[in-house]
Length: 65
Length: 345
Image (cartoon, rainbow over all chains, first blue to last red; front, side, top):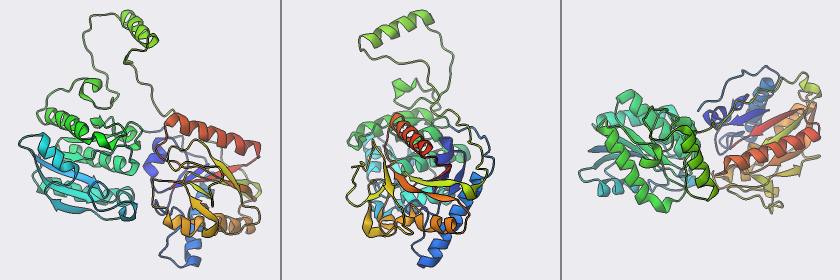
């Protein structure tokens, strides 16, 4: 599992192993200021990062807190 | 005592979720709960109040920290107060970070308050004295009173009593002390109290987040079935599984067979913790069916799992969240899903 979120510290705190920075709390995979086609590209780009992390060994980082 | 106070947009009286993106604003004097600080402690003066939106705080924490540190320094503050934050997660995380920064970088005592389930607690309870606010904002006066009691002791460099006596959340600090009874005697007393339903306090706090072993990488994504899961509360219009917008007890799986795009008119969001308009306008901003379909067409992923899974991740007791997680994982295993993209608002 890869988690896409805009609040990365919380994801890491609870021990998520593969965390990808989202684009905003209210639109983790979007940006209403972009034209629809551009916005979809942004979404695809973040998704590709998440998919890449799924193919890599995840650092066995211990959760904080 | 000169105080600088931090509030989110809601308690600062600026507005609700629709104003959650406002950048830090410095106001002279006390606002909202800050007035109680002055009322309850003779000689206390809230020199200034910094107000920022919850989303701004979560997304641009470093900038917020810099603004608050500058304000605390310039105001000649002797105490920094943030909150109380109750169950508000983004607010709690920001308040914790700001208090920790003020303490560490300026050496000025800092105090905040939040409910035990607030994510700010696990991030900062070791570094700070976080007063237990409970979940009810109507108890504001009592909470502020406790915060001031803790703050005064911190300011005088006085040793604080135990968490239960002072009202702060256990920090996980062990301190030697002399006791009259042996461990066996204390244990029997505690067991007795527990059996007859009297209050008792454990001397041991279990760690709340055991490490999670990382699953092995996906060997061949181009042959993998990938599922989308979200805790952002996207549901078909009408919310057929009645997923609660707060403290949800269930989750739903919703068919996306043949869909290459999610349309706003077909969905709604059951989540009371963020401004849901953007996702309601275009659900792909949370559940990226359109982009994942493209990647499926290109052969980057083998197959998109035929349903997306959704629940609402807000103000939920940990035990309940863990159960929901286990159930969803079980379902995805049964359905032979190889990889999951979890999107959190």
